[in-house]
Image 1 (tube, one colour):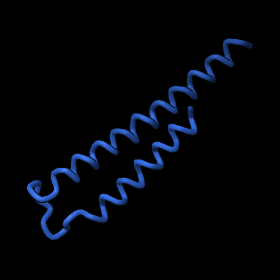
Image 2 (image 1 turned 45 degrees about the horizontal axis):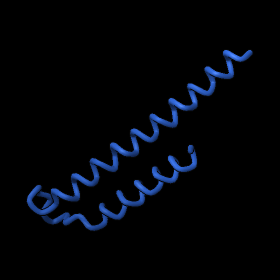
Image 3 (image 1 turned 120 degrees about the horizontal axis):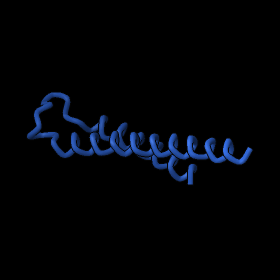
Image 4 (image 1 turned 120 degrees about the vertical axis):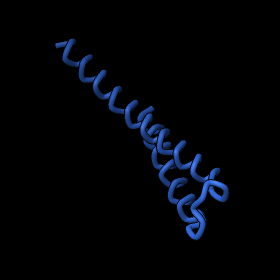
Amino acid sequence: MKKFRVGLVVGAIIVIIGELSIIDYDDLTLSKNWGLYLLLIGMIYTISSLILSIRHDKKQQTNLTDNNR
Protein backbone atom coordinates (compact mmCIF):
# COMPACT_ATOMS: atom_id res chain seq x y z
CA MET A 1 0.00 0.00 0.00
CA LYS A 2 2.91 2.33 0.73
CA LYS A 3 4.26 1.90 -2.81
CA PHE A 4 0.87 2.88 -4.20
CA ARG A 5 0.79 6.04 -2.07
CA VAL A 6 4.32 6.98 -3.07
CA GLY A 7 3.33 6.42 -6.70
CA LEU A 8 0.36 8.75 -6.26
CA VAL A 9 2.62 11.42 -4.74
CA VAL A 10 5.00 11.14 -7.70
CA GLY A 11 2.07 11.30 -10.12
CA ALA A 12 0.66 14.39 -8.41
CA ILE A 13 4.06 16.09 -8.58
CA ILE A 14 4.28 15.32 -12.30
CA VAL A 15 0.80 16.80 -12.83
CA ILE A 16 1.80 19.95 -10.91
CA ILE A 17 4.92 20.36 -13.04
CA GLY A 18 2.86 19.89 -16.19
CA GLU A 19 0.25 22.41 -15.09
CA LEU A 20 2.91 24.97 -14.16
CA SER A 21 4.24 24.72 -17.69
CA ILE A 22 0.89 25.60 -19.31
CA ILE A 23 -0.17 28.51 -17.07
CA ASP A 24 -0.49 31.79 -18.96
CA TYR A 25 2.11 33.82 -17.07
CA ASP A 26 1.31 36.97 -19.05
CA ASP A 27 -2.17 37.06 -17.48
CA LEU A 28 -2.35 35.48 -14.01
CA THR A 29 -5.95 36.50 -13.35
CA LEU A 30 -8.51 33.98 -12.25
CA SER A 31 -10.55 34.41 -15.40
CA LYS A 32 -7.86 32.78 -17.57
CA ASN A 33 -6.37 30.23 -15.18
CA TRP A 34 -9.02 29.34 -12.56
CA GLY A 35 -9.15 25.69 -13.59
CA LEU A 36 -5.39 25.34 -13.42
CA TYR A 37 -5.28 27.01 -10.02
CA LEU A 38 -7.95 24.66 -8.68
CA LEU A 39 -6.06 21.68 -10.03
CA LEU A 40 -2.83 22.84 -8.41
CA ILE A 41 -4.57 23.32 -5.06
CA GLY A 42 -6.16 19.89 -5.34
CA MET A 43 -2.84 18.23 -6.13
CA ILE A 44 -1.17 19.99 -3.19
CA TYR A 45 -3.95 18.72 -0.90
CA THR A 46 -3.56 15.23 -2.36
CA ILE A 47 0.19 15.22 -1.76
CA SER A 48 -0.31 16.51 1.79
CA SER A 49 -2.90 13.88 2.65
CA LEU A 50 -0.79 11.06 1.23
CA ILE A 51 2.29 12.17 3.15
CA LEU A 52 0.28 12.43 6.37
CA SER A 53 -1.18 8.97 5.71
CA ILE A 54 2.29 7.47 5.22
CA ARG A 55 3.51 9.13 8.44
CA HIS A 56 0.48 7.84 10.35
CA ASP A 57 1.09 4.29 9.14
CA LYS A 58 4.75 4.47 10.18
CA LYS A 59 3.79 5.77 13.61
CA GLN A 60 1.14 3.10 14.02
CA GLN A 61 3.58 0.39 12.95
CA THR A 62 6.20 1.53 15.48
CA ASN A 63 3.55 1.59 18.19
CA LEU A 64 2.58 -2.00 17.35
CA THR A 65 6.18 -3.19 17.48
CA ASP A 66 6.76 -1.38 20.79
CA ASN A 67 3.66 -2.99 22.33
CA ASN A 68 4.73 -6.49 21.26
CA ARG A 69 7.99 -6.27 23.20
